[in-house]
Amino acid sequence: MLQAGGFSTYLPVKSCYPNWKKSWLVPHLETRLRARSRTVAEVMAKHRVLATVVTPAKFQAPSELRDLEDLPVLQSAVGGQAQTIITGDKDLLVLKEFQGIVIVTPRIFITTIAH
Image (cartoon, rainbow, N blue to C red; front, side):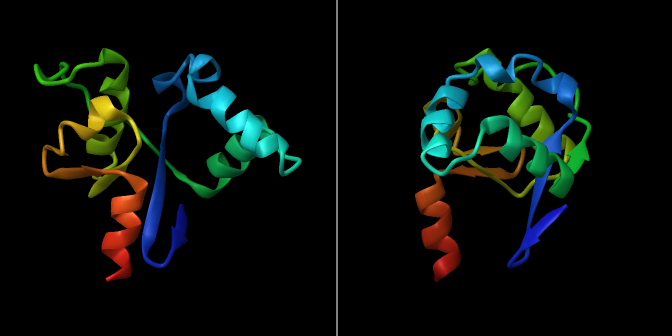
């Protein structure tokens, strides 16, 4: 479990994201990481060591979920008993909350904890 300042990071079981390398996020990260002489695989490997692996909860997609590819995120958050989902994904952000889990942008999260 990665804990810093009282926060924990949870990682869903690998089967939850079988196509993570095809994600829009990976090319976005690759550019930024390359500038720091790092790779996505290296960062993901470190994250897997530091994070707690959770088993996603099983439930059908809620009707208000616009992108079905975001269902594993919600299932993992519920399975890991998360308090907050921090994301830039607009399809998740429009939910604002799911089963008591607050969904916010990184900027709002940082602003909130800074006060």
